[in-house]
Image 1: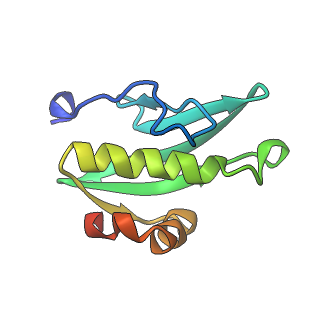
Image 2 (image 1 turned 45 degrees about the vertical axis):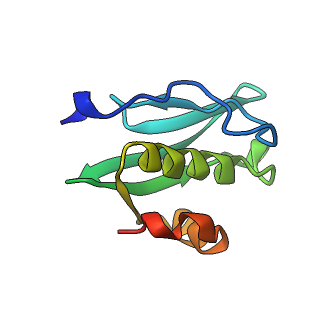
Length: 107
């Protein structure tokens, strides 16, 4: 099942995005490194649902919109892979309510 999931690799979603987001489909995570510090979103699958279960941005690089870009990358990946999303971490759950263009992906 995992092999059939598309890999979006490193990318920028749009010109407004400030950080290069990396997708590791084997580890099931999205990451970016800012000033040598790694931030991440971790997920797992529940059938055809991508479950975001952790968003982590260390304090030294917090407050810059990094978590938002990582969560957006996960939602964009899910859209491209025709998956629904269940945001089980509190940050992702609040994020999707503020970004209504992604609520159609909610499981």
